[in-house]
Image (cartoon, rainbow, N blue to C red; front, side, top):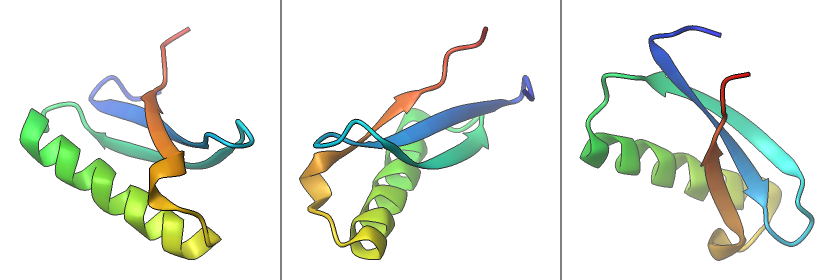
Length: 63
């Protein structure tokens, strides 16, 4: 895993399945990070035919 990136999983809360992954620069500000993650969440909702509210993201923990 790159140390200069944060890795996120997007999860369907109804099934618990991970539906996508996204890596963003670790230097991204909190505001820009929220914009990036929300944009991807909306794209996934349209792509998978899901309600926006049932998709959430979580930061992948380093092992």
